[in-house]
Image (tube, rainbow, N blue to C red):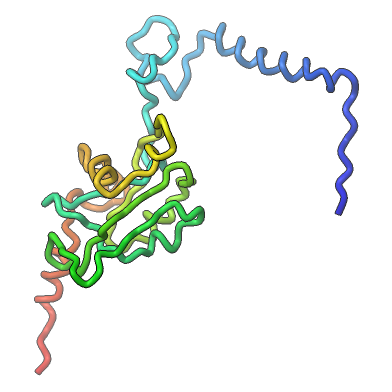
Length: 204
């Protein structure tokens, strides 16, 4: 089907009105004394409205913000991922690549049959949809509050397992997401499952 484009007038072809409209928005914010609701907490101690000094000052990210996906550990600092590969299969842009450990794989906690040998996320492909977080049965991957993903070359933005675990383990940011969902902070899933299994009646 052929779509006919609307013909632009000679003034529209100059793009001057669009440029002026852009400057109008910029100048309105520049000369306005009204504080931004986004930066209100950061600027509460200032007499006048000032520009946020990034990266020393950062935007206060609200709860539920879907930032970069990272791997998290449990309270005993053990890897929660069991290499089920559900996140890899469900990822729309195919940004996740998991290499299973094979038959000789080692585990570092009770209740886990295997751990990933390699776990890579290509941040250039990731669209922050949150499917990986929703599908993970072990609550091992979370979209945390990082939005400044930078690198000097493309290879720097392919995060391996060690980097994902180190970034995801900082100051228990994953447990903040647990709290907002009404889950008690610091739940040990496999410890709870083991107790439930032992409490079940035995059949002879």
